[in-house]
Amino acid sequence: MNHYDYLVVGAGLYGAVFAQQAKESGKSVLIIDRRDHIAGNVYTEDIEKIHVHKYGAHIFHTNLRNVWDYVNRFAEFNRFTNSPVANYHGELYSLPFNMYTFNKMWGVVTPEEAASKIEEQRKAAGITEPKNLEEQAISLIGTDIYEKLVKGYTEKQWGRPCTELPAFIIKRLPVRLTFDNNYFNALFQGIPVGGYTKMVEHMLDGIEVKLGEDYLKDKDAWDRMADRVIYTGPIDAYFGYRLGYLEYRSVRFETELLDKPNFQGNAAVNYTDRETPWTRIIEHKWFEFGKDEDGNELPKTVISREYSSEWKPGDEPYYPVNDEKNAALYARYKELADSEEKVLFGGRLGEYRYYDMDQVIAAALAVAEKEMST
Figure 1 (tube, rainbow, N blue to C red):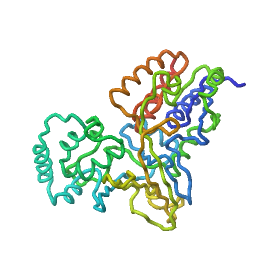
Figure 2: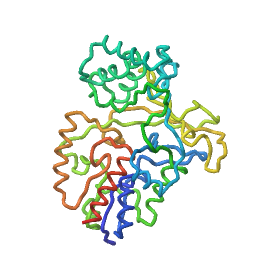
Figure 3: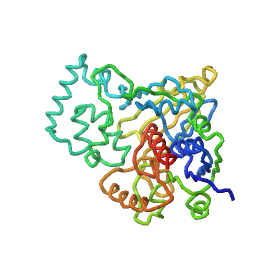
Figure 4: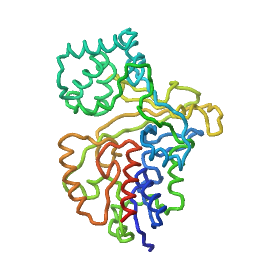
């Protein structure tokens, strides 16, 4: 059996970045993944020359120059701008909330009129210090927009009433008194030309990769193969769930190939009413402007309906439920993790936190730099 400086468990972004940095520093690396493909949840598969985001839409965006420079070593990025549309019983609204949204909702034309309307509705609701997501949302965008465009979508997404969700969840939502439809306030944004799988392949060039390998089923044997282990799987699974299960929201996808060139005219349409069972529909070809890598128009399209659900063992964990109960449980697992001498825990599952892609990459780069300097 070969012996390695590092065993990296998980071929997603965190694992791939760490492995690439370790190899670049002259370290020997083996990366394993229980799935049959690399790239983790950013994996894209080709269907009729369309790069389909198998585990949900991933749009790269960052204000971190070092991260942007890093990913551009492995892929060329297009100029895709995320401008989702909200569908409420057939009424279409611009997202993020901006002057187009306010004009459609209230007929207002100026930023002053929009701000005045929001303030009027916030005062009518009697909110001073928002104590939950509902109150936070109303204080940000008023009652009308909350009722039509936030409440139903959010309750489908999290499976809980908005009054039981923490206020901080909605604070990420941009609200603009301008006609700016770009969802992200980011200097750099786009989709890698050729898809994310191709980008991760380039990161892992020259690194030994074994797929379909479950680290936790033969942990001791894998541990003997390396001096250090970088573990990016669920932290509670690593410890055999001995303290209990951390909670997640999961997502189920129904993906269809359609024999038509255009289904909805946009990459993402959110269905914000409570009655529609899915949260959104993704039309994957519009992430790359409806064209293949040679610039040819694509005659077919692929759509994915997303259904949010409560996670149970065996499901894919997507979104950590960052409430007080789970934060306390994670803190106890973190104590156990810190006592593991040769294992470093990283990434969305290893650290039980919601990460944007640039945050994952920044964290992996920082840990790799620290490791390589010791």
